[in-house]
Amino acid sequence: MRLIHKLLIISLLPLSLMAREATVEQLFSVQTVKVKKETTNHSRKNFGFVKVDDARVHHIAPRFGGFVEKIYADKIYKYVKKGDPLVSVYSPEVYKAKEDYLNSVQLYKKQKQQRNASKCKTKVRAFRCKSKRDR
Image (cartoon, rainbow, N blue to C red; front, side, top):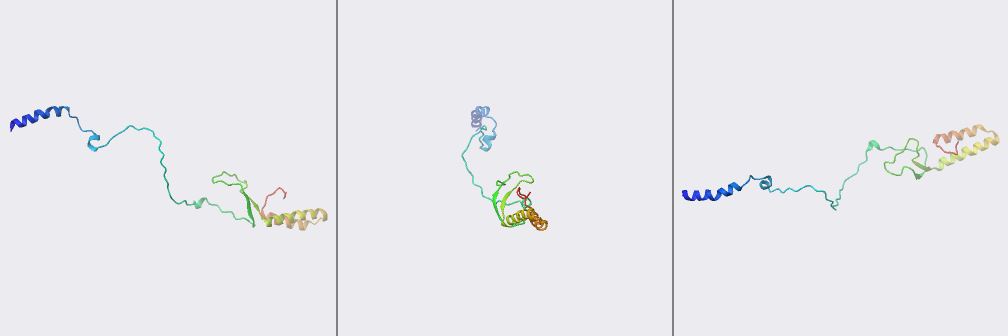
């Protein structure tokens, strides 16, 4: 029995001298590679809901009826300054008020009727319209 132990020790001695400590890769079966940059052609679809931030929504109520002819602020996040026009609006009410005012001014020049012209001018100012023809 002692002889078998001695033979076993002698046969395992060279293996124990050549053996090293176990590394992380050997213990956990992990392989490591060097980092390299690669391009991939993966595409991913994500679904979700878009909610509007109510604190940043502004409602603009016109003082007259009509419809929008042209939108100047036509892109999201377009930078606008104070006084820049946002839309161009056509309104029969405003058009009629301006025509009445221009007609009354012409009539005033002919007949010197100040009272009628001032009423029409007040009506145009109530709409708060800015136009080159008004001035």
